[in-house]
Length: 225
Image 1: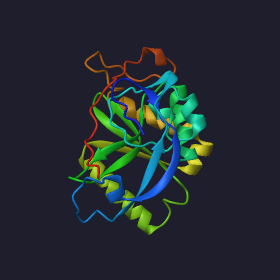
Image 2: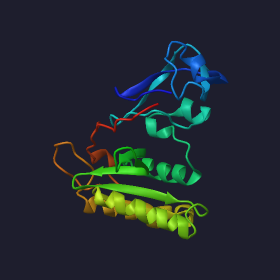
Image 3: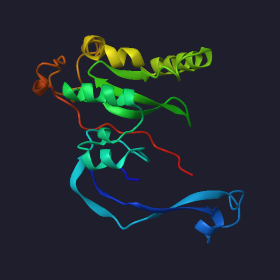
């Protein structure tokens, strides 16, 4: 567990043991309440260790937890390299990195007082925001899933997000011929990548060094138990 708020992650702790414990054991000085006898998982952590190289964050965003693997952790250059959500997301992430398009993985967008959605890929443009979703062949098939996706898309659209969805087959077989060009086309329709007050430029995957990117955007506040 770490928080990416100041450019990079520099320290980490190893999980030495996972225990089950009652809340009263974790907080012995807390007054009795309705949560007193709840059971929790207690993580026993090692002392903080410093990374050989920091893992950079391109945007200021509060991250409570990232599911990852040790291999991804030790090889990560930036925060977005850590996420281990699905092979489809990893494929698209690798393709977007190759053209140096700055996106944020698993970006949280609140749509109500205590609810919201995690976007697979959030792209911030000069004239809008783009949500790119990778739809797994199993999860997104069926009336219930289609209805949930439709409700989600409607809520995000009302918050000013454009949405692109790619099925697994498209990502596996048409990444360079369809998925990436469609993302680039949409980004440029939305004014190119966010320039943070600089002169806006369309995104050109053949000249990634010419892009101008914004480093920070404030993330949502989380209500943690």
